[in-house]
Image 1 (tube, rainbow, N blue to C red):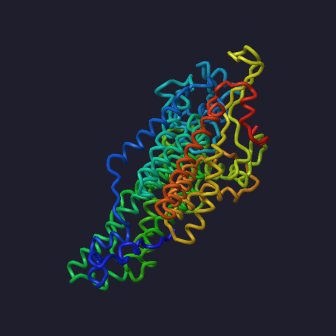
Image 2 (cartoon, rainbow, N blue to C red):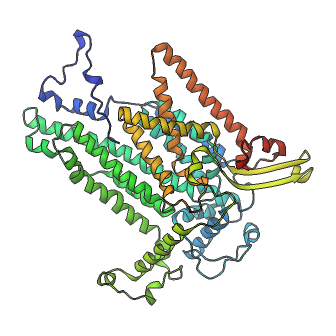
Image 3 (cartoon, one colour):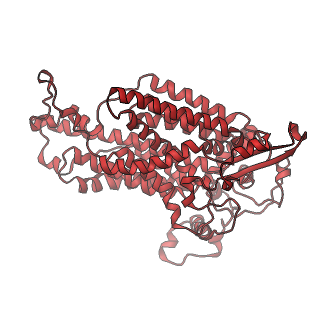
Amino acid sequence: MLESPPTAQPVQPAPAAKQHRWLETPQTFYTDAVLRLRLLGEHFDPGRWGWIVPLVITVLAGILRFTRLDQPHQLIFDETYYVKDAFTLLQSGFELNWPDDHNDEFVAGNPQPEGTAEYVVHPPLGKWLIALGMAVFGADNGTGWRFSSAVAGTLSVLLTALIAQRLFRSVFLGGIAGLLLAVEGHHLVMSRTGLLDIFLSFFVLAAFGALVLDRTDGRRWLAARLSAAAHQHGGVPPSSLLDYGPWLGWRPWRLVAGILLGAACGVKLSGLAFVAVFGLMTVLWDVNARRVAGIRHWLRAGITRDGLYAFVAVVGVGAVTYLATWTGWLLTSGGYNRQWHTTHPPQAWWEHLVPGPLRSLADYHHQSTQFHSGLSSGHDYASNPWTWPFMGRPTSFYYEGYDDGANGCPVDTCSAAITDLANPIIWWAGTLAVIALVFIWLGRRDWRAGAILAVYTAGQLVWFLWPHRTMFFFYTIAYTPFLILAIVLCLGALMRFGGPARRQRNTVLVLAFVLLAVLASAFFMPVWTAEMVPYDQWRLRMWMSSWI
């Protein structure tokens, strides 16, 4: 994730009358303008179109996600767990057990949870977010169950467009990124379902955006403080300052990232992989900034002056945020394992310093960790991470078959389905783009390629640590927006390749790819939204037998 400094462009030879002479003396190196150019590149101002384009695409994303959100009027796939858990959180502050086969009663508006605490293995924040929609729209309809998911998915499109715009310095490429995510089927299905993973994806994406803003702010402050010191000392900062560089002080966006990463872990503990990768990534960005700025001991300075603070901001603030997501469990007394500490007195001296409820929570996490690492029960739609890049086994969330005349079926047999099937054009292009990014990062040290690959590593490769665990394709939603960013980085490189005529042809190719992706989404839309179609039309969209 260390990148080549953007120094080549501003010092390229120009016509004699316009040659830049910024770096002819050490004094000119440490001006604010030159340092900003080296650290951040040319200034980019998207203007009003930088908001108009993302917002228009976000409206499109909202239409796709909120239309017929209440269909089907039944709990599908793991909604049977998370939606009912969300209901009991509203009632008691913690999850309660339910009678067997209670879905029909729940959907009919007659929920009757049992009075005993339920053992659940995921933290509560995602279920609290589902509960917000139910608090507004009611617990007896799909809109209430899925509203928060649709909001998170729609906002993710906006964030993706804005992040891409900043990364690639192009309103056009930012718009492409937003549009591709808006119509991508995997993201669309998860945005229309009351599961947890869309919230994990949203918080990871938002945390990444916060760290990108922090990267910009940190480099601006580094340039400002070095140039100010140089101005006070005859054009060159004092040698003592150049040894390690200045401390960059308050980094609000890094604190925001810590909060968002803590929230991601509060949805699913798989967010811990992103905490580790993002924490390392932001420190590497700071280390390289000091190197580019001419700091002598840039590695040591990056670790001591940036790394320790980054640990507190990302890990410390994230931990506090995560603990806050358990507030309902902590402030009540009836949650699962809540009273464990009353029957297990402290043993070690340090355990006496930990409040009883926190010791109970720690034991709860020990139990859930054992559950996750040992989960190996069979499932028809379980899939191996090796198959995820090729979309070998998408998850079927819902399927109903209808005979002639039933439920308005106009032919002999009809189907209504929700399959967590990604747009094949986008998904397979994303897999190729990830491979291309490896070479782009190795060849050019492009920090954007390194950052996207880091997120992909956290979201995809981490699952190989548990090869026998039961896993599903929809786990990949955590990094789906970054597959889009990978595609757009490659499309941007294609648009810049060659001379003017070649670039024009390449731009046409880029637009053709986007059009093909949109048409593919229109083709697969019925199997993403439970639209009733003739059986042969449903079968036409199942390109592989493993998709059924």
